[in-house]
Amino acid sequence: MTQNGKNTAVAIQVDRLQKSYPGVKAVDGVSFTVPRGEIFGLLGPNGAGKTSTLAILEGLRQADGGQVTVLGYDIQRQPREVKRRIGVQLQQTSLLPDLSAIEQLILFARLYGRSLNKTAAHHLLNEVGLAEKANALPDKLSGGQQQRLALALALVNDPEIVFLDEPTAGLDPQARRRLWELVRQLRDQGRTVVLTTHYMEEAEALCHRVGIMDHGRLLALDTPGGLINQLAGSSTITTTAPLPLDEVKKMVGVQQAEQEGALLRLQTSDPATINTALLALADTLGIPLRDLHVQQPSLEDLFLHLTGRTIRDA
Image (cartoon, rainbow, N blue to C red; front, side, top):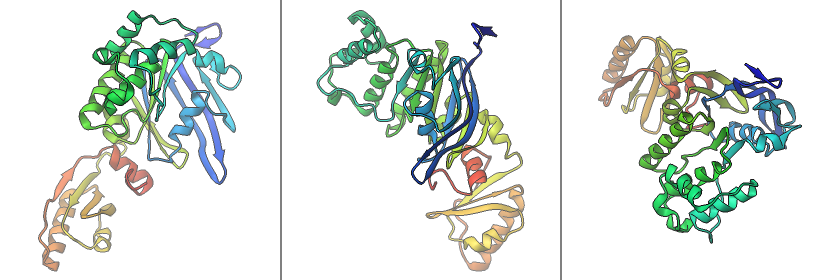
């Protein structure tokens, strides 16, 4: 569908995006499309290029090469048109220490050239579950409440697209899930959401599609289920038994193996045979085989398969 020469079904189009810093290729030929109404996630460790990619889409940084269109506007040539239509929650949003929650919303709205009265500001705070904290200063808010206020600030201009950079970083599990519900509400309102995360479970729980990034490159892109299906027939076996890693890697049928502290993790397409081999090795060495578990593949396993390491080690 097109309107005024623009594809109204597409929120974001990224084509061969490039960005370098001294000695670092932060974004290396990344391409993807985000349809309107989708929750799209970029998943990867710190330094993967997620934040640099997002900053270019938001118009906060200039690309070295490639093309980006947001809501049909070229981000390089028409940044003002883009910025009027997007909301940005930065990874480390700086809340103003001397202004209450409601005062911050009213001020941010003015920066967008909008008038936000107290009734509208209270409504926005209610949307993010902060109605009772309207007059609270930032230092009186918990980490999760500060993140929700930052999300409210990203919504003051009623954006069509909301960008969230590591929105739940540093939050406890309960606060993280509360923010997940708010992200789903944005989707239900018809907004497009683009987020970055290094939490596998967050990408699986929220995103329609996920792009896996590492060292500036987009390694894979699909639905969470589609990505996991790339490892169809592969299982993960873990044990805390102190088996020698070199011996485990030599076993026929072991695709990958690594040691994470006391945990031995390996991938195989034949878990029954490998379990038998592990039992035999443990018996030969006189080592009790403890906490042996077989798991179906996950996004963590796919990242390990694509990069040779877990996202925590990257």
